[in-house]
Figure (spheres, rainbow, N blue to C red):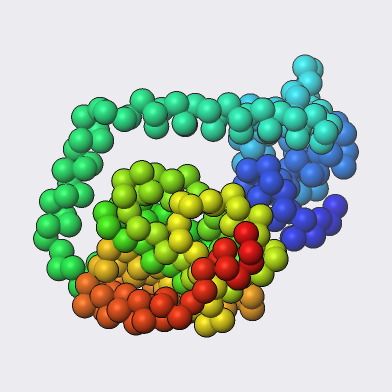
Amino acid sequence: MIVKDDFLAKLRRHFGLNLYEVKIWTALLSRGVSTAGELSDIANVPRSRSYDILESLEKKGFVVMKIGKPIKYIAVSPKEIVDRVKKNVRIESDDRLKRLEELKGTDVIDELNNLHSTGIELVEPTELSGSLKGRHNLYNHMELTIKNAEDTVTIMTTTQGLLRKIEGMKPVFEQLKKRGVKIRIAAPLNKETIPALKDLGNIAEVRSTDAKGRFVLVDRKEILFMIADDATVHPTYDVGIWVNTPFFANAMEELFELAWKDMKPAKQVLKL
């Protein structure tokens, strides 16, 4: 039986199996019922491993062991497997979330916070920098940085970037607004942005600009800037640089302030 490598890779990714498991499982699907030895030959898997693999697949609900000699295995239908995997993922996810929630307020978190605080005190501010790859990682770090803002959050972004930030970070912006943090956002505005801006309300001050840039400044201390145009780079390959540098961040804030004065408010541009 010949199964293409890319198909096996998809099975591993979607069903959470290792290479030997997907080989044995697909071999069994092609036979319906078979022995461990037969499956080993078909799937080109060492015989010494076939019984362990089948035992693992049985525990995961992918196969059923048939009573009798020699021992044979029956394949469970793929449709049923999908339902079982979904159920197991849901159970595991709920269990992990529950355990993480239980950590709040415990000695474990206190110990971790103490370790982090001690470590940060030993680090020079200029050493607090790093690169982030992938838009998902960028936005996670962006949210973390913005959450800790005490005074100002300044954002320059693209049209699509504005829509993403309003959709994903509105709750964070609301929290900052309640704490009295000043939020300013500059982006190219058009009719596409009108619904999002209405949803944002007066949480942040938004102005229109034709300038191209993607960066976030927090408290004139930290800056996160993206080095590529989000219209031309795939989200997976989006790259950003985060630096804790009051000197550079303050200079960027001053330059933004000059440009901000010439930008027109969203309400004026779009007649909201």
